[in-house]
Length: 272
Ligand SMILES: [Fe+2]
Ligand SMILES: [Fe+2]
Image 1 (cartoon, rainbow, N blue to C red):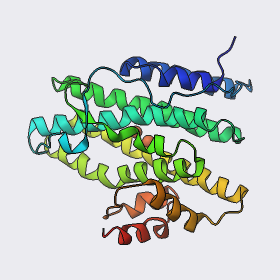
Image 2 (image 1 turned 90 degrees about the vertical axis):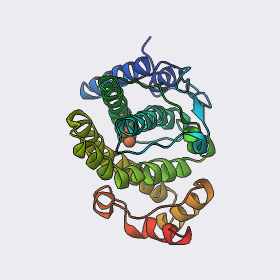
Image 3 (image 1 turned 30 degrees about the horizontal axis):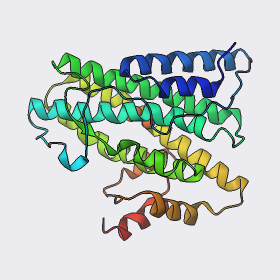
Image 4 (image 1 turned 45 degrees about the horizontal axis):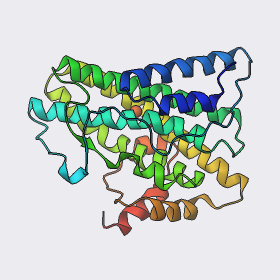
């Protein structure tokens, strides 16, 4: 029996070991992509995703306030930064498979699944790149504590497809576009060429993920004749607890189809 796409998603979500998770994710993505290229249909199915994905025993997950901050100018600080990005990427792998399985009851064009499978594959590559950099620096993913709140956005929007698209790709991943250039600079100054190359790959591919979010958010709004802009503001106010912090990477956000009137009013309101 061929695995359905939602079964593949649940397989990734219920795998705890990070390298095993990303290997499965990449293998499932390759299966989906080769089937699509050959014109074969992999059914979506209705496998139910867990409320929370399986996680390894380490890293220890702590409240963000209890994760020690280190100066990025030191080797330890750079390791902590790579570790934080690795943790974000691992959660991103699960977030991208989760959206496929979580909202499988909403009929979507096959292009939606193509986009999210591709993004999940890229997140898996991103995690592996960060884990490789950590190992090359004498550390590893799991060696430091990590943020416990990373799955919060997924739980908060588990019943709201619009909310998921608004908060995850269009707020959280868009935030990645704002902060990654500064991170690349830190590693460039330190002469860490492997980390620079890895972060440049991540930076380039994340533009696509934000664009997928914007594209499918607008698609759903169009289907339901909803005005995208005020609805987006309402969703972010409802589901996103933090502040939208300028400076924004307006150029890359624009490339991803995110217009300034989507985010600036929310930044002003939260006091910037
Ligand atoms: Fe990523
Ligand atoms: Fe992403």
